[in-house]
Image (cartoon, rainbow, N blue to C red; front, side):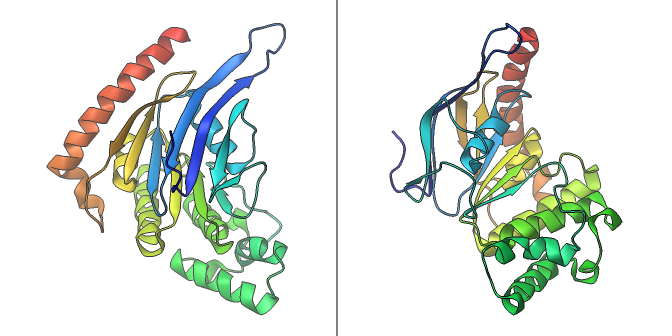
Length: 265
């Protein structure tokens, strides 16, 4: 049973994709139960094709489960909504809008008056270090700057939960590390509830308060591992004994599933 007091509840959610071209249906997710308390930062880790992005899309309301349901604050999720902020790996900014206008988009759609939404946009751009680029267009920004804008846009709408699908996967290692620190700093200040999908073990440990390990397809939660590292965290923590020990444990968990996934391919 899931925790009825949780901010987010996933109850027996499965996903089967219909057969294509006379083949067999694809069972992406076994029935999954999950409870995410208020202010938790949960990282979902698993081999490619295990269904972790499918699960996130179902929570976002961008896909529908084949069975089960998702509840946010006790209300069933049936479609996308402003109470869930989504950040993808691809840079999903509106190219015809400036950086500031992209960040203002959600508040504008909700009918927030122009002076207030400009204030909200300016505040979030300052927090992600992009105030000087408010009038630029996405094509004028680096990948890291575009993702900072996407995070600011998601948070400017005041979501109840932030959903991130491998948001730093396309960035170089140095930019990725800086983006991790930026996101973690925002979370430590805001304590938003976060669900973060990644295939990077170090990233999951550094960011998460707990790490969910998913099995090879059809995905289910194999392990739910707390991350007992104190806050605030910085990059030096990645070489600590506790971090290295947790990385070794998660590496074994993921390797076993990756071997299974490779065998099925």
